[in-house]
Image (cartoon, one colour):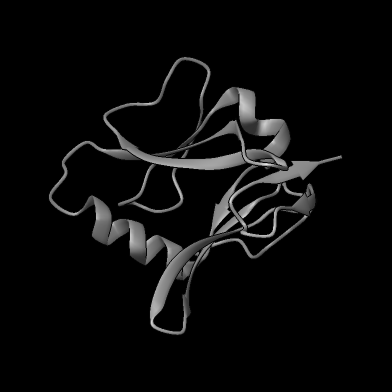
Length: 118
């Protein structure tokens, strides 16, 4: 198994090895659950990322299988905003956070909770 590295021209969403390990732990013991990525209008800049553990993809979702243990559904209405995004899991000091390396972002709010695209 390999994980695609960050490619701003990619048509889908990818995960780093660190993100895959994080979601493997989050999904452990939750038979049949998958990760769902969507966006919502939020904050001072425009949009916020939404990650949920769900039982199934919603109608129209793009369903990806980054590895054998992690399924990822991406909301169809968010694909234009998320095109080429890489999900990462990083340690920042004593905290661990999910990071979105999204090549479409042109601005983020100061607190990092929302973003806008061109």
